[in-house]
Amino acid sequence: MKSESWLMVGAAVMTAAFFAVVVFSPNALVDEDWEIVDVCLAGHNELVSHEHSTLRIFLDGSEVAIAAEIGIDDASCDGLRGIHTHDGTGKLHIETPRTMEAPVGAFFDIWGETFNENQILNSVADEDSEVVMYVNGELNDEYGSHAMKNNDVIEIHYRDKSD
Image (cartoon, rainbow, N blue to C red; front, side):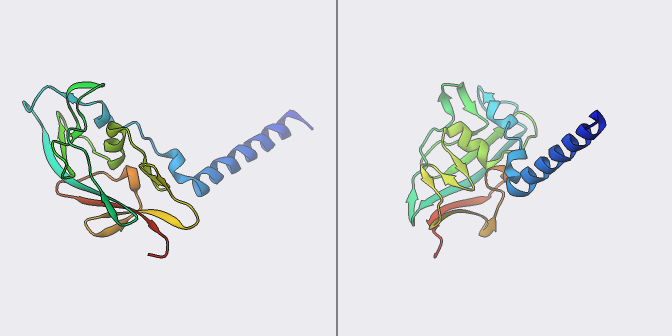
């Protein structure tokens, strides 16, 4: 086979592989290097944004407490991370020195926990269970990429598929 033919075959294979990734694993192309994860504030001076969202997690119908002081004086920051909690109510404080998105997944990165379409904390979806997310009462399939807005109420459920 001539080298031009091999190049055409190679290009066709690479194109098919790219489309397979897009169709069968669309989240593989999502950039999860969120700017807000690297925010570390010494205090509330000169904030451009100070918003709040509420996060609630349910595993098989039982609500999981969101710990107090997630993202405050942790191993990566001696101050306040861009998304943090002060108490155990699930109220997320989104504070940034400039305009930037606050994806739900960024909070889980700061927390050191797992959240995606197949897993919440240590609960993994299988043939009988699923992970679903609601934002302000509406089903939302953006999972970790959902950019939180002021006063969003985010509920994540790990549940039986029959529910």
